[in-house]
Image (cartoon, rainbow, N blue to C red; front, side):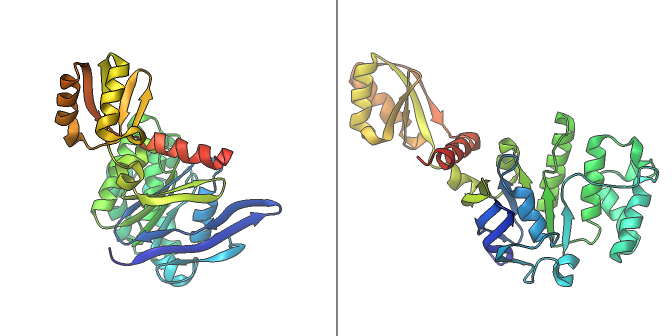
Length: 301
């Protein structure tokens, strides 16, 4: 796939007796949108703060753009929005970005490009205090874009937004990925990650539980079957796919087999004189996978 822009190896952060991040090893490839998924308090923000060079790790190591987090080289190529953006309320959005640009040593022409990218060019002259929450979040992303960075690190960018604001932010993040930016975003919203991200890291209790593409994480698709009488249907389906690939849930049968097997299933049930009332593809959701993982982590089973 290319090169890693972000790598961590056994990264640890402790605060007294609390281990907020526990041996996290992850990698983000150039050009991908990577979703760092976990519930509130899972260790997402702490990990991102270490990658941004804002806090030092207690143990392990991390690399950002081939250098240590917080180094001049890493900072020059990284745009960061962690937690809620903070700007001067009495200044306009444009003037706030000018202030940030001057601190960052970025020419003023980048301000207009950033406002245009986050769709605030028409409201750039308005005072920040009058912005909606969604506009404030987009301005925060605009500030992260001022350096035209290779890597964007965004912490819960849709947090607190209404449905319209979430839709606009998703469209912006999708556009940034299509423009070639590498995006590492944290979220506790499973549908958001499933829609936006190429790969996902799942974290809970400070530990990375899985890292893979969304498709691999969801696993193989299946088939849902409703048929009667259920005893005869079960016997027929077990003969087709094996007992280990069959589960009965809420009066339906779930088959771990590809959707292309639907015709074969239908014919077998008809031959067994079973009445088929429903047959459709069944896909796991990221929510189901996530809940399975975190429940296993919590209970140890």
